[in-house]
Amino acid sequence: MIGLSLPDHARLSRRVATVLGQNPGPFTGPGTNTYLVGTGRRPILLDTGQGVAVYPEKLAEALGALCDSDSPGDIVLTHAHPDHIGGVAQVRARYGMLRVLKLPWPEKDAPGDPITPIARDAIIHDEGVTLEAVFTPGHAPDHLCYYLREEKALFTGDVVLGAGTTVIPDETGDLGQYLDSLRRLLALELETIYPAHGPVICNPKEKIREYIAHRELREQQVLAAVADGLEQVMKIVERIYVDVPKHLHQAAANSVRSHLKKLRNDGRVVQSGESWTLTG
Image 1 (spheres, rainbow, N blue to C red):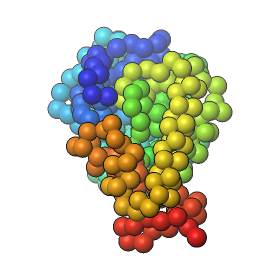
Image 2: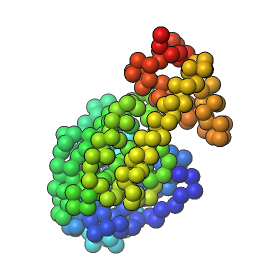
Image 3: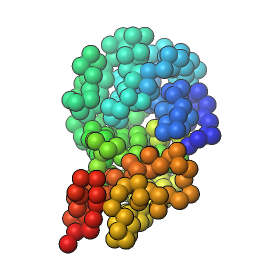
Image 4: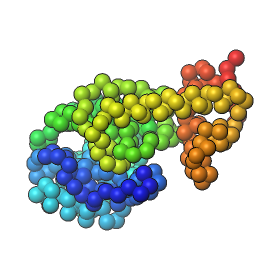
């Protein structure tokens, strides 16, 4: 996503506007997309960015210019990674103790920022909109996407991005769960994806299928490398990611480990310390 740029705020549809989180980076692209969702003067704020100092001012500009509003209503969160929840305290400091709705993740939810727990299949109503929570673990154990019924649109958080692919974190991610989540999303009637990073996706089913195909290809490449006797993660990275600059190989190693762990869970490889071999 390096080189992408997005406006500070923009109206995307009658019901959806976006406010950029102002936190660009190699994994966030232009920054986290936060969304104002609803047709009333107190729209839902979906995700809050990372907590960058200028974000509250950009949010206030967007509320006034795009929603004729002086405050959001409820805050709804996709998951508890810092670039999605980091702005909660800022928003509450400016607008009061707004409700924060999310699926709990006790190890990550900040005790100083009380939340209103919601279920993995919650339905959230606001003026002009109905959001259906869709449980999509894999990138994070608490991850929810939100289906906007009125537009047949999906806020995908970090499950599907506007550019690039999703990171599966070493400690708390699960590639098997992630692929299951993607396949469940294919069952939805979709016309638009509003991702947490990168531009709006107007070919949602095609994009999701591309994501699944990419991971399936990587799995076969990793399995073939192990079958050829490459037991160490970085050796597998060097074989598969020949066109990727060396300084990005550590990030690629994270992806390889996620595939190896899935293959281990599937009973196809075994781990001994830092070495990986085929079963049997």
